[in-house]
Length: 129
RNA sequence: CGAAUCGACUGUUCUAUCGCGGAGUAAUCCGAGGAAAGUCCGGACAACGCAAAGCACCGCACCAUCUAACUGAUGGGCUUCUUAGGCCAAAAUCUUUGAAGACAGCUAGUGUCACAGAAAGCUAUACUUCUCUGACUUGUCAGAGUAAAGGUGAAAACGUGUGGUAAGAGCACACGAUCUUAUAGGGUAACCUUAAGAAUGGAUAAACCUUGCGGGUUGAAAUGCCAUGUAUAUUUUGAUCUCCUUUUGGAGGCAGAGUUGCUUGCUCUGUUGUUUGUUUAUUCAAACAGUCUUAAAGGGUAGGCAGAUUGAACUUGAUGGUAACGUCAAGUCUAGAUAAAUGAUAGGACUCGACAGAAUCCGGCUUAUAGGUCGAUUUUUUUA
RNA sequence: GGAACAGUAGCAAAGACGGUCUAUGCGCUGGACUGAAAAUCCAGAGAUACAGGUUCGAUACCUGUCUGUUCCA
Image 1 (cartoon, rainbow, N blue to C red):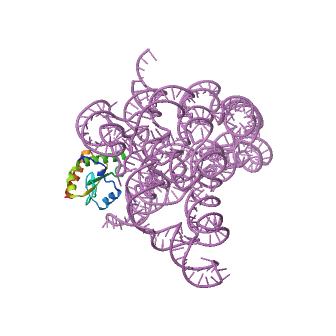
Image 2: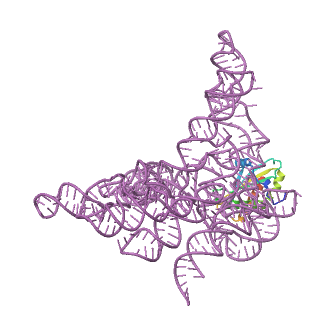
Image 3: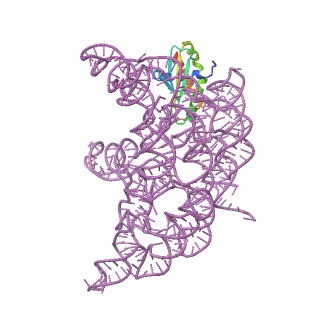
């Protein structure tokens, strides 16, 4: 699998898994992003190890165009930075499930989003270890 | 030339790298809008066995055409307002410019019309007037006539003028309005022209309602199939009857369900056994189980495929029609996701980019919209 | 995606189903009481979501926007 891709297999899709994520998962925030994560172990068969999804609340961002825009930017930033976690997950044989929630009510620059995503991934790495 | 308003059309773009959804073995190709929005109308499509009748309910409402259909569009008619002109004492009628109209029926019935006013609706009423008659205290009273003038109100019992009269009044006449009737003429029709007549009988139907026409209900969270999984379990309401017959069948009744909110009709499901007591008798009764069914409280799944994108489709040309739109020919395949696909970085171009993101699909309407192009109207200044 | 309903002072919440503008409570402003304040009493201001239409007259009737709530596997 290429290093900088983000295909369907790496997205969290099941409704049950998302329900479990919110019930059992832990969370922290680094503005303008809030991260909810859950460590599933041992890793299920045919899993890539990392699963993520993005959410932008309809209450804070009322227009669909803007919601799509923010989701794409978060996804893009995650795609470019996620290589940090790859090794740790494969060595420990776990599946990490992530939910990113966009908190800000107005538009943030891509540099800002990129920075906070990188920071959150560093934090996650330290928590796994 | 500038400005304003209205209408129609359009709705940034190029290169490289990394990445996303779909098709394909692969190379590669395709990948949001004019409104994708609001869900306001109309269809297609699907399910409810058929979609039956009546009532209720809802919608529409000048006419014709277009259309799959429409609360849509096009053309026409009428009414109202408006521009200019003509006539004139003035209004209306007439010609003309532009705009608007939920534009069937208050001359079918019922209701309502606050305050003010004499009176707010049927052939009314008389506050201040006006006129006549009578009385006398000579400017008041009584009786009668009248509704023109005043006053009230959003609205006052056809409008304006003339005659008439004691004073007045459609009482009469002229012009006009409204309605009814006649069909004489024109028009597919709405309607227009014409003739005759009159109990001139406000406003309101976006008040109830009446008339005509239309509508079965529910919407892709519809619906069909496959897979996984649980509880063929628990409590509870009711039915389990009669006749015919060779039968596992038929007819009726009963219980329940469905069909549209109700009724009728129609359709479907169940109506089967065992045991005990009793009796001349599978005669009667009871209990239990089974089947169908009502309700309660629970348990499980929430994955995949179809529906789903080739269509009342789009482009170009020809052609019929005033137009909406139709017909013919040739060519094209143009998102199809399912926690849901279009982004980031770097570098350019220009007028420096508005409103805004498909979710079954079409035809409209409504609302949002920077800039640009074209057309129409109004108007300022300058020149001739 | 589809459907139903609502919007009245700063907040809550009535009546009025077309008649000239509306009760009440909490809150706000001013005054009285007090040495000062609280409580109490008196007085006052302030509203029919927005835009258009029907009507003599609309909070109510009709149409279109905006906002909010609820329901449907």
